[in-house]
Image (cartoon, rainbow, N blue to C red):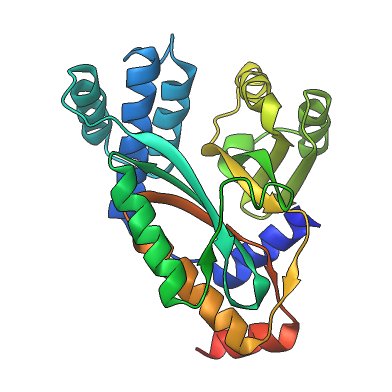
Length: 250
């Protein structure tokens, strides 16, 4: 249910995130990775994943090298990973993943966004039963050239994948949260270049929304996503085809 919903949400509400925001997010991830495990990606799996994702987003190599050097030299701020959980209008659950060098600033901003949109910021753990965290690996079709895709899918499922979604652009592989490293190693062993890999949250239950509720939820999501401290926003809103059509009209 969760993965199907996420795929629909991505299709309907896909946004072309600003490159500057994407680069900021990757830069913070590089900084946290370097401070946690050092500047050598071969000895630091978290940094290796961050560099891989930077490459997948076409982040210039100079930017990546500069971010590593800055963090290794102690010039980068210390970032803390934090989560915020609350409800938008209509009882729609909204989960926020952030990385910040000033928790007071971030929580103040996030609380104000919920309030302005008619929602409420809840306590940590209040939505834990409504979302599951999974590893997601995106592979471009070009990286699979010459491979038997059915055989490849069986390989990754044997390697611990929960599900493999295939489309004209390539494959998206889902694995349990705790199997992130195992699946990363499996794909490396198979010699496949991954465009991006990250941990995402997927709703276990969804909440139906009418057009007004949907607009209010999306306004909150937009405000949260515009904040530089916010890395990702997840919600469990489910829509009818009629509401989807209204939203697409603008």
